[in-house]
Image (tube, rainbow, N blue to C red; front, side):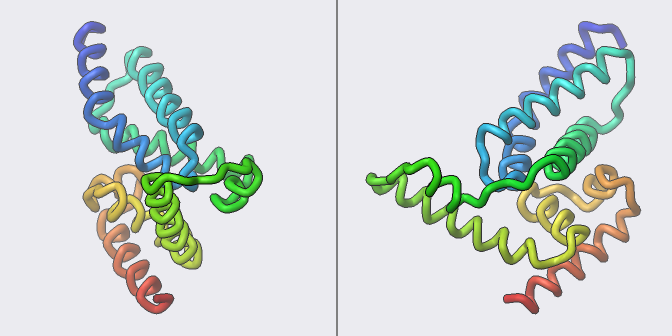
Length: 167
């Protein structure tokens, strides 16, 4: 394949997956829009560098999610994220209109969901987020994590069982 074809393919992938990768990063990085946007940008930059060096990518979706997961893991190793409440408290922001109040309620619900998810082991949390938040298929999750699809299915099942016990 020539460079122009690869360039068009990359642009198509960006159009298809940018918002999905952003949503994945946003959720996994505790609703930090700026960090999620930076990470999304870095995902596509790394993907472009890989492709422009002549490497072939068979499944672009899995490839992009794998890069995103690796960047999220790298970030979490470097720094613990502040909770939403602490960020609001430290910034001194006060919300007044109803759309902002709805946003706060949504953030609170997401925060509660994240708190429950944080109580289960990472291997289960990771596949549940990919399956139910990112709406990825079991085969895609298996490719991203470099594991067997049946292992992904087992982790999803066990993760759901653990969540039910906590709820």
